[in-house]
Image (cartoon, rainbow, N blue to C red; front, side, top):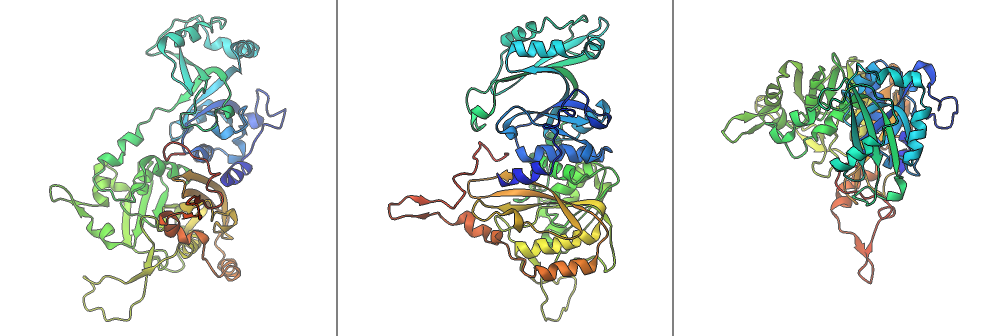
Length: 494
């Protein structure tokens, strides 16, 4: 798929370098088996790299090795290098799409290969964790099919060649070992099963996903939501890719019901948002008991009201910040209105006399996605701190998407482009930019002069999504170019 090209080619891989593929990665780091969730496939590596960056890692030091598969994106186990076990734990404690990181002792396509691989792993790295004074547990994990308890016990018994000396403690072991069995017999929505070969992995657990933020911030229990409220997990993924951390100042230019700002505030950031809809910013809506529900109620509900710096009625076409203000925000994260459920609007001048400012509602006009993104990128180029990130969604369809149409700006570098398939008609792409240097007004003016028309093919998104497909004279559906070749998966999380 097109987005694989950008997100994978720009990443640092070590699979072609024999020296790097040894036990010791470069720059004094360490290789880990990385267990990834099978959802939001193209978001997984960018999220881990971004979280590692918030923990002080240089992204260039986060190397990847591809798993043995003709389509690595379908594999749950990748190999990643990180500076230390402590950094690995910090990364997994925050990511949404990394299930665990493990010190890999061996792997193979058969049990015989697995045993030989474990036997070849250096004794001085194994024996300290097999001591008599250390209790342990072997957790059997699987991908592709469910393994019952009886079979799990059989698998653990096949590891009898490992010199375990400590006592087994299934509840509070001092050392946790991990056996992963990849055995995909049926598709179960995973795509072509031939791309996921049978594979066995064994290692020592370094870090495991254990936080409950998705349940804690579930939209089902949130007081104030709307039809365009961002999914909780995706809001946290967006903030992770924006490198939001404690002390960050984060801005959402399309704040709506505040889903993204809530996720940012959870990490200790100060947040601010704007929205063109006065009803969202100021009035909210009435709850079942007649109480007022608004963004402030959401922040009170989670005990993070002190993180909300403020909400402003405004938009990026005529933003409310004074001229000359620069490098204010560490991250700008938002979901622009692109016309599938909510069309874009911008502030518009009306030549009328304002008799009562307290009741006056400013005029608005239609706002195409192309114009909206041009305004947003120029705003981000000016208002982001150097090294800060802009993270936003844009829609895409098989017949209109071309990578060259993604907006650019001379101050911003496009670093990630990850696709989330929604339907066979359209998807959306999470685009991540990073500010390279100080804003140059002259360079920005030259860029806009060279690209005067911001119109994008995807500005037709509403017609593409809701219009029926054309049919030929025989009544057969005429699919747009690329629609039939698009990958289809169960659910909307791929």
